[in-house]
Image (tube, rainbow, N blue to C red; front, top):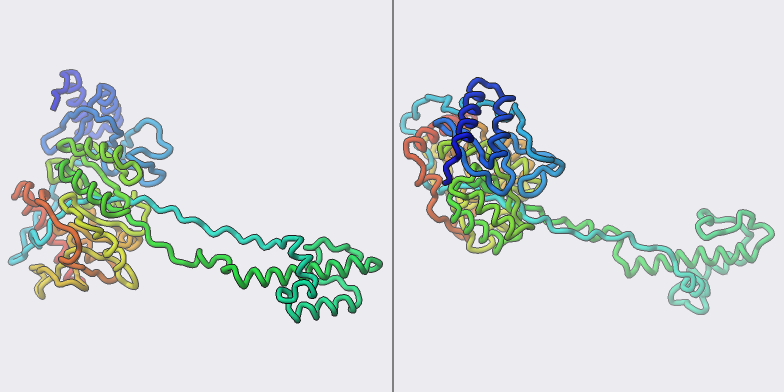
Length: 454
């Protein structure tokens, strides 16, 4: 990584001091100066870090990413140059562990039953043609032809022929709706015009009935239920090669969109995500923030990042996926097809708690209590109603269980027959073990509370 010039480092030190003093206005101004010099500054556990400014827009924090009016690839639809919201860039040092609760005796977090990282694709919404209103205006030649029962008896029929004969013999009167065929307001004194109009009126009804016998009713196609829209949400936390393989498999084997949130361009993963956006502009949407993941020494939490993706999404179904999860076929459609009746979530791997709640075990395909975050689909409205993902979860492990227990309805897992596999789960194996255990216990305390409450 390039080393920042000394004057940029001086600005960053002033920025860190201003944030420590909660002088947000000064911190924002200094951040702007640093960016103008071609650098980005963001918090780390040990202070700050400077990285070269990439060729895409970067928001300062996860919280600062706009949830309404957003446009593709990290830019608000109506936004001009990026501005930093002081309230969003407030000092996040409070992200430090607020819980010192010891691990409950015998409590075991569900271990690497399945690893997790998020990959979400906001699949391109398929345009659906709308059925145009059927033109019911009668062709003049057809009307005239149909008005003569002798010429077209098969079209007019005996009943219509009788009605025409009755009209010719009946006293002149103005039928309802006659203004639609241009009748005179004074039929008296104009019997020929009245009779002609009556013939046209009855013939147009006949033509209309004929059309209805061979034309599907208006709205018949619209009555068909459109398939739900689907987005895969990915949290990008480094490991660019994993990201590239995950996204390309999604694009090749499904039609979903991919919505990705890049946390801090760790290891150049944000730059790779930007390349994928250019390679698949209609399939991949990206947002970039300067914050790095909490599990990699930064301040961006897993639950906060996941909820941000959920709120940025506009699809009916939101898919939680990790970049270590690779599709071998269309594993998304089977999950989406399970979301009917009272089923609100369907995943690849499911787990159930033992009676004491201190251990979770792999579940057979079918109804389960918990879905693991390697890959699962959820009705987006149900997830939003549940409040999104757990805000206090700074790390993924056990947070998927916490989220599962807050969802309404039924959860199901499909198991090993789903065409998908997992590569090395770096979010588990490549994270500091002491950090992993501490944050896992912290989240599992809340899981136990949910189980007791249920």
